[in-house]
Length: 160
Image (cartoon, rainbow, N blue to C red; front, side):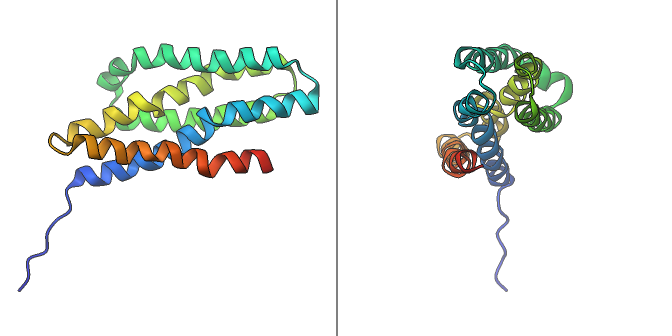
């Protein structure tokens, strides 16, 4: 009888991180430059104002990344990643349904936190503990989701 070889659980983590990266980069990284044109063209809001909100999104995200390890120790990687995915979704809806420019700034802490909790540092924290020898390969496979997010989401944002 042939022995069935079990798949190392770390590869499932890599697959999950790949999917997280698709949505994280597709929405929170590749999305904002495309979002910039929509409120400018449809609502007449100044590009500088929308750009300031996008900048705030990334700056607030950076402030969260600095404290990501603290969040992981307190709540765990899974809970923080889930919260990040939820915040990304809420942030996306907030950006889409903003009717006044100030509403963009109301939602940027949420979208920025979602970006931080699902972006590069988060992917590294998910994948790295599972690998020693194959860590570079595992991380590169997970981070390929970021490129796939751009390939999949960018055309959707433009056509939508």
